[in-house]
Length: 586
Ligand code: FRU
Image (cartoon, rainbow, N blue to C red; front, side, top):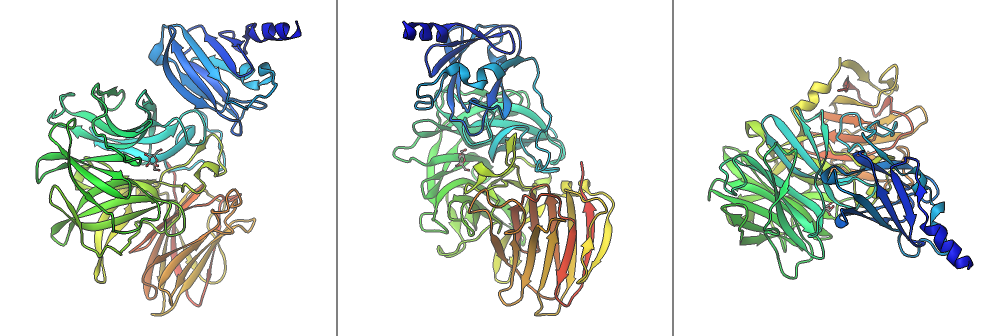
């Protein structure tokens, strides 16, 4: 009898905060939520530490979507919107299964998510992360972000898609989020562009403008190729005829499959003028593979590269093949992201310089050579924009590291991107190296410059400390002399930059930079080879939670989480330096 009463109690509808949700607990772990009314969104309460529940959306009784959401058990950290627009006008039921083992002898109505769940006509887009929300780096309004995807320039707009979890600040539910910009620094968020389906989650990929309608999706359609990550990884297409605002998945998906290749992903499309064909380069285990096509739908395998080349201490991911002018000729650079195996642990971007004849990539270096694109810990999944204007090659990287990306101390969102960087090839001694320069658009953020001369006395940078600024530091050292700079805040948290003449290196030490204990892998000193001594220039881009350092022959990207902005700069050594300081704001 008692059991019957309990069961009855479980099944009785419980009205949630908003009257348009009817909650029925069918068992300890299975709950139905009937949605009524015309609101566009259901706000799902998330507790970061809760185990994920499987949420299925049923429209007129048919399953149309599913996502894993850490529904709140004892406290709601934040609400995430589930957008019902695709099924507007139908009867919506949420079928929710709490994770097995989550509730042993539990009363499901105790979970706070049922009372905190609500419907809403609009989404609250206000920023709740006051401390570490970047000022001028792209970050998602909410949720988790990793790789930049599908970057393409069209009709004056820079499109940025990205690996997004719209339902929590940790990896999962991989969806392409979307934002557009006219100037590479001000981004308009456009929500979800491509969402998971029966073929799997939407992993990384790329996009092109099909100017000649080779695919038959429409002239000037934006065509995206991404990895469908289901039981196996395959490559699929989606296209847009309205400037990336909506995408239609190709009915013939998937378009590239491989047998027995578990890590088979991250297709980067490009147009090859030599063969007048579309090409794709993708990661396949410990190599990259090239394919050709006339219509973006039918693909022929061309060649592979990489088995014995470069670093293999991790999974090969997110390749990109770019053509760059060098001393009057063209060279080809293969960008290749690897995780783990980076020079300071975890993820990093390596590259190979060589030639490409429309079928095969040949590397100029010996197989044993490994080159890194950035010498920090937080530069990953770097790829370039397709169709960029003025012949530019513009790259952007995810500014985090798989070692700790899921535990960095931000709320509401996790991860931001690097500043966009124009790529070029330069000579360094006998070598040809890839140089990353902050895109010129970043300079438009500069406010009035302040000039400082730096000697051993500490310099206060701003009267009121600022989170976002740029410093150009010019050293005039003796030939074999080094220098050390310490950037600190009022609580003594500091980042130390050192030029070492013996090792001819530049390093950044973030071990005392602020919050570092959230992961054992975070505190680190990162080092780059560079020429030390004589006249040197260092450019530092500082934001709420990152420092990007650019020298003439290196770049270094590192996250930092100070309690307050760094506002004091001190120099050690017998020398002086001139500092031009720009506040940066949008
Ligand atoms: C790289 C990566 C890609 C994959 C995506 C999934 O960070 O692992 O290889 O497509 O993230 O989110």
